[in-house]
Length: 346
Image (cartoon, rainbow, N blue to C red; front, side):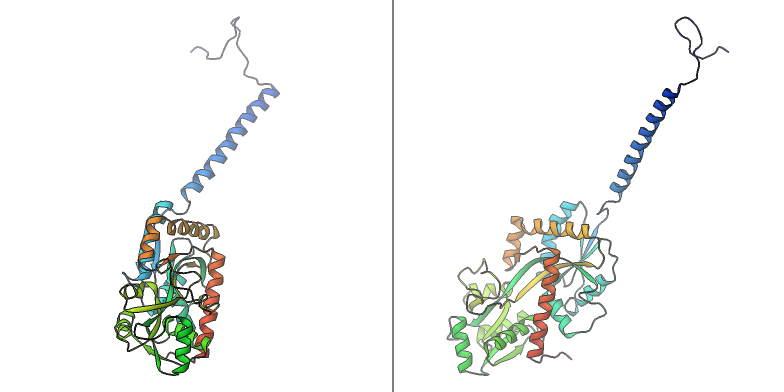
């Protein structure tokens, strides 16, 4: 068999021996290739494990069809499009959101489980001992949106402002009834906050929800209430109820002529049915920040703002730090009101 060794131009065999310089050159090439390979492999691995690489579960602390459910569903679509994964809305109603909170508190902090909750969960925390701790077991992501409560009175009540209502209540102690959506509800605490701040004596009349409270409000059997804008907007529009003030930091877009409670002479009087996003404690900060960013972009899309506005809800999209501070301020405020009014839940 003929040799396959290379020959030079004169027909002489070429030696396979490589000089030191050649060896160094070949070693350098090998090292460069190895380095390139090392750079490529981890990059591919990181890409394959990037968040999110499977559907994300959004546990909603209410039943389907309610205001909280609406908020969760209208923001889930643009977020899903942005992150490239399905957001599965999982309704877990009951105990003012406590059932959903219990599920979240035990979920893995891997960025694939979040909870959409409302102010009702904080109010529930004021009166009830739970297995979870609102400030130990969750990471705040963002306050998604808020629906400021509106102070409304029955149309037959001879008052046209908060100042006139306070004067009337003081002249008729114990004769003004305020409706709420139940004992120890946010609407109940709002009425007690008003009575405490104004030094008036009001009679609390609890109902099983807004639907049960409104007929008596309209008929004049109860004379005033604090309820969310979405709950009373239709009755205000129809002239069945008179709005005196909005308990938010700004006037409601749907009621630009109605002053805030602050403008009406009650600084710091804020009551909102807000909606927020929480994650299990220990969820990676990068994921929390990404979710907050996507929520902020979602609620500012025109079609989302429009759908929220129909229910009297406005976008907020606070930072995780702001949301955490807000949770504590809400818990502190309603705890003080419950104690001052001696509200107890058996």
